[in-house]
Image (cartoon, one colour):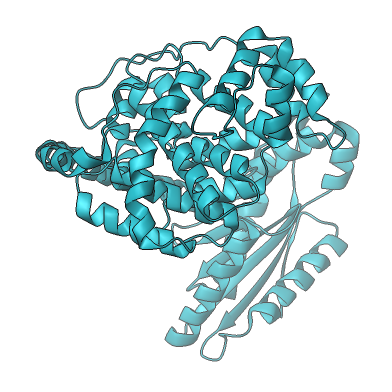
Length: 498
């Protein structure tokens, strides 16, 4: 399944709408859900199965399959269900979920074969180590590669190409092609059918370099390496990896070849039971010869991969350019008050600390103007906050128009604004403050009953370096007290701090 930003390695493939799957048999769905209940019995599940004759026949065929190894012929659904048990019935039902994904997808035989191969391998390993729940091991093996069946519903050509590549390369090819990794798609299927966290863990980690910690995770990990022997161009190295993996679950190396030899016939038998085509399966004895032939095809794949990577590099460069632009926009958003368009409190404090350090270093003046809008609370109460917001936005624009390029203006609090004037002494800052005081009333705001004239109370404070680097709080305190005195003196005036 492609991610939205996927970059094609070849000519663009026309977008294909995934075929809509016909719903699963109601009996299958019921058994999958009912088997999770604590109070369910095998007899109840068998009764559900008999409601679907096709599924009932699959249960009987599954029990009589030589892979299962019951040793006697079973002819009734009840007997077969009793032998399988609750977990076995649910595993068979979940098998139909996987095979159902392959329905109506042309060329999906290799995809399904990969799933069944892992299921058989996991079940075989479980029996060798006498695992208490071989059915659970079979199920987790079945779902290891099911994510590629999901991908094939959207893009069969690319999903099948990945499935036919060496198993150890599939994740890399999915990443290079922009696919969602099949491990994550498989894990999503497992979650969808409430199979539990241990199944999710096993599926997500079956390609990891280290053997997982859980019992089910280890068996899935070993099954992946056993199946990879049949899906690799590197016979000797993949066989050695499988042998080492068996040691992680306590199986002697001499058991490797018999296990590998048992997988193809068991896979074919299972496909018959599930009524699905998987194509001819290579026997163990022919693997080395097949691997040598496969190496030539692998060389062609790498040529294609190089082309894909070159295209990916170009895409990466374009993405980095877009990212730089986006980061610039984010930086503006992070430092700007969204209502007024001037700096926010955090950006103001950073600018003031910077300019104080500069004044300290250069022994220059630094002034600030702290102002608040007169009677804004009354205006909000009378005409509403929308009108008040319009006032604040207008004040921000006026302040920017009254200041120099190197000055900084920002929203300091709800109705308070701070202007930072580098290299400006007290008298110079007073001139700027008076300019602001006179300019604001000229920009009346439209109100419900006519224009509203705006005034402000302004406090000015100045400092000079050296020795002012740490005087931020003192400078703001002087400006705030001057602003407060301006309000006490009737508002709409400028007061300079001593």
